[in-house]
Image 1 (cartoon, each protein chain N blue to C red):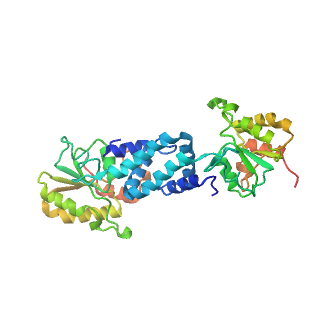
Image 2 (cartoon, rainbow over the protein chains, first blue to last red):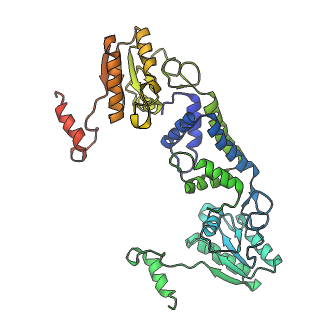
Image 3 (spheres, rainbow over the protein chains, first blue to last red):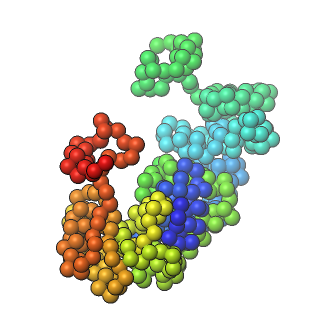
Length: 200
Length: 200
């Protein structure tokens, strides 16, 4: 691409490094910034700098937090007897947005993936075991990991490591999505949801 | 949405103000910034601040420039006898990237659009006439505007205003796009390209 200005080129190249944004979209954003001017652009850049400089990991559950404890861990109304183990903050937010869960969380920071070189030691699994050993309040662990190869591997690994603690261990239900169509459901999901049928 | 942190929420809301980015994509970007850390994020925020604070409009053609004259106007190898009138910098870049044009530009800053409240006085049309009256070098004007209602209106308006200057006035060719399929071309384009057929 030929750029009319060096500063435009630099901004386009930086924006195009973001996931899912190509050079054409980056150029559209640059022209948007130029149109909106200094103050609205600075509101964005200040928010981003504030974000990366001042957020930390919650010292208990390793979710993103503004202070030592995240919103969930510092909330006295949450049920501290149930803990959902999730891969990352996005999954935590997805569960929060269902408004169906009032327990606490433990954020692993990913899932075991030999292909990507992520082993158990790269994740907060030791921290989970430490937390479970020290916190007598916790009675149930929900392994809320995606039903993928990596998610299942991680769930089995964690189950093996915490079995001796005598906690109730559960996993999120798998099956046909609500509103889904039998005909268009993949064979593995449909097959498994027949094998794991529930009484009605 | 429930956010785990106020700083995350603020960053998501600022990013989601950008055109074409919703809250889900904004959240994905926020988690990307948190993962990549302070330095890569600052490279982006510095580039954006630099962009909005230090770019100006070229004093001759009103394209985006780092100095008083843009890359094109300050380039001695460009043919100053031909001028393409374009709506904005994106169109200028699109023409530059064809490598088929070696003239200069005049950037209007938009097109006439009564619906959006943009009249001739909101655009650099007076500046164009001023420039054409003062610059004896210019021999041909290419009205390189999109073949839309607004683009055509703007082209006709400019033609009326500059007719007395005795310049050659042309417009970019309209017709079936190269590689396009007759069958799938819209009727207006196909009809006009029969009426405006060229000898072969």
